[in-house]
Image (cartoon, rainbow, N blue to C red):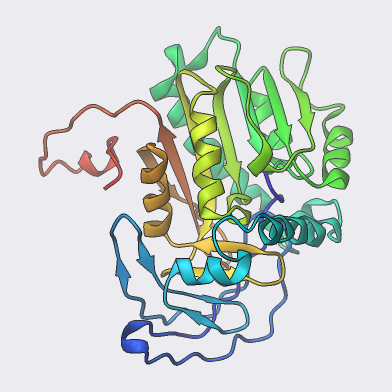
Length: 332
């Protein structure tokens, strides 16, 4: 998908969105993490945000220069203009890709100088993936030809260290050409004849339409923050028809503590958990399971994994069982 791993975001002081009494401490100077996990350095977040959930979702946020927004709509209006302004939206995406084109095609580069979090990230993802495969795929996927799509694949870090070990074919989607070329080289000797990277698509996520019924898993990590809300919804609506029966999507992203944080440098947005869930609901997706990533430095944004399905999870009778919270549920 668009841009590989996000860089970590810096926590921006504090802000108050109610009654228009806004007080923001200017964001501290920070070292920007490159790539996928919008890992901007995050100082302690002390934010008070009023979040109202309606069909239009009003949620407050702040940008990396300290400017506050009373709503998501106000932020997008400033960044990409009024609805239908394709010129400004195209420039938003072009600027985002340009940022990543200036980043070194290495693990440390795509992880914004935090290459040492790679192992923890992969371990957390593998535990999550194995659980989902056992629960969702027939016989846990054994004796089946499994295919995955790695969105925002960057240099092939996730495909090489995780996906190619579990899937017979992995397609990589990445808009930054130098990253995709590095992925080809990195994956040339990875896997085997029966477990390999198959297709390398140099296409932005918002322009990509996956092949119908091809994928068992679509993995979206540290890249969806580059999409506008409307393009986010459009992508997942297209992706739903590309899953095989029992297939699922995984979204692994940085989470803002409240509202959203807009990165003016790489043109991306770090969304809060409620913000993500509102968008998943707009896509008609069901939240099957979530898990927090552990073992990352405290100064980085929290990272959460979401497993999403097209089919409606079975109804669950509410009980006081300790295992209840781990069962499938529809996003509310």
